[in-house]
Image (cartoon, rainbow, N blue to C red; front, top):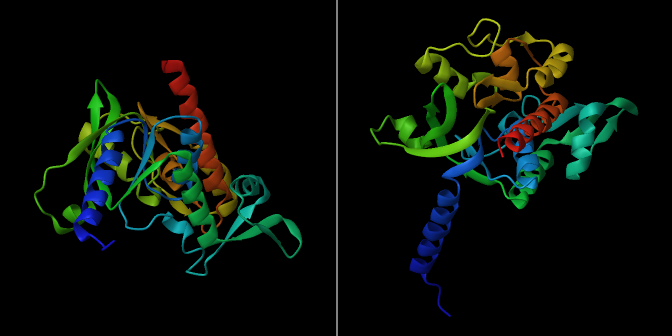
Length: 263
């Protein structure tokens, strides 16, 4: 049977349209496909919640892809190794030290994403979040557009996605929280009522506070990973990823509890 190029185009358009339509009303919308966002999406989808990730770049993985300075290995401490084990990612003790484990950055990124997709997560890459949807002081959705539209400054109107909860997993830049701070003019759930800002690198403290700061930062929106530390004013940790993985697990647990309470 000859290859029908038109059939190929139709298949792509129809299947993507079905996928996008199924994501217009979500339980959880996650902004950013870094490690914490992908881990969170996996646990939420595995629990049966309609979950989608919106990623600005063409690729997924955030900072995990490059390891440290493009040496594509990552380090996790023993607390975070549990999650790598759960995903079936090989983690090797460094110099027989049971405190530090190394893993291949490419394997870790691709396996976590694959497991998330297989659990039912819908990943939309090349999509930027340019605003949020609010009702009576609570975030209840996202305003999305193609990243190339944003990059070129074209005047193209966006689309809207509704969600019971939103997760800002955009890392150091806290992109969604900055939208809320800039446009809403209301207090965030931080000590100052504003984004506290990320401090310089102190890995030991940052690994702990990444998890501690994983929580609701404004009604309807939670922060995870480096977005949590940047929002609540703690340190960065560099290419050690245990806290990121644990943060993704924690935010999923918190939101699952909220979703149960709302039913």
